[in-house]
Length: 229
Length: 111
Image (cartoon, rainbow over all chains, first blue to last red; front, side, top):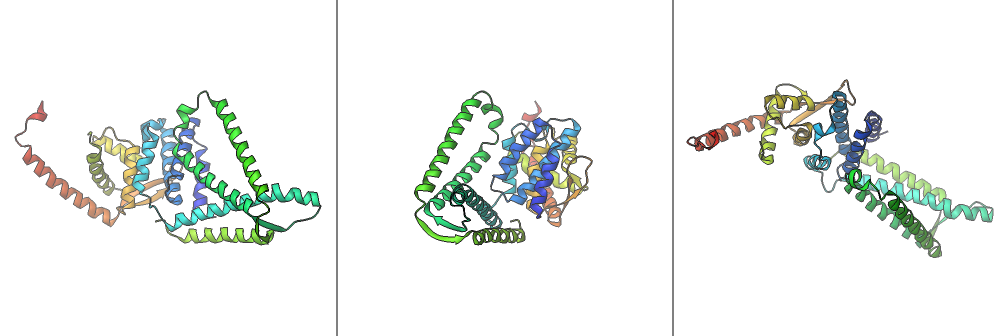
């Protein structure tokens, strides 16, 4: 396990000691900092420091407002500004690529479960050839793009959630979200089936699995070797 | 003090001085600054400055066990930090002299 995973796990364990109110503030801060474009290791170290401040304040019986003020977003912005993240770093590139590989492997797995498994049952035989079709590629691209946008959106709106949005509207939001998600899934399914005949090439599933796993391990290994900034 | 930009620079100098007096951690530093008269200061103000000073390699940090929660980060001055502290104080003294001269015959603040 790398240093980053260790730190994330340690922070998670320690954050259980936070009171519910402080935990909510902490979660927002974590969301905001992790999506800020800072180096992930640097962000996690800062999160550890902030968690320490919160826990110590809790022990002293103080409110978080007394420690970091009541504008959490302004506090986070001043921290980010002080850390002065670079726009480009090799570490950042590799950690982004790592996420892309994970997402693509996951989508591939879903594709096997929802698309190939039913066919295997129907035909009563094992299918090991994975056909890389236009439908699969388009869907993967759409989902990747959507995930990036959603993560950015969550980061940007971390602190809004707690006050304004919470009251009322909860049901309406839930129904709206449900409708949108169903539409998207239906659309993706349609693309997948309609564009399935356009096959670029076919490859054995175990080769593909090995490529994904190898790529993931390689990216991780390189990232660990790269210095923070 | 109301001017945030001015305060930031001065605070950085004061933080360097207090750290040069002996290894210290965030909360202790804040309490110390308060004791000297920076009343509105909190860890929220000091922490970003510590990050910046550390990023500029003026500070070293070491984690030590704390009775609560995660390890505490103790800060000490690096060699560059010592130099920066000296240059801060020199600039500050010069500035004080100049300002004193300019304000020698000024009475406005007294009332």
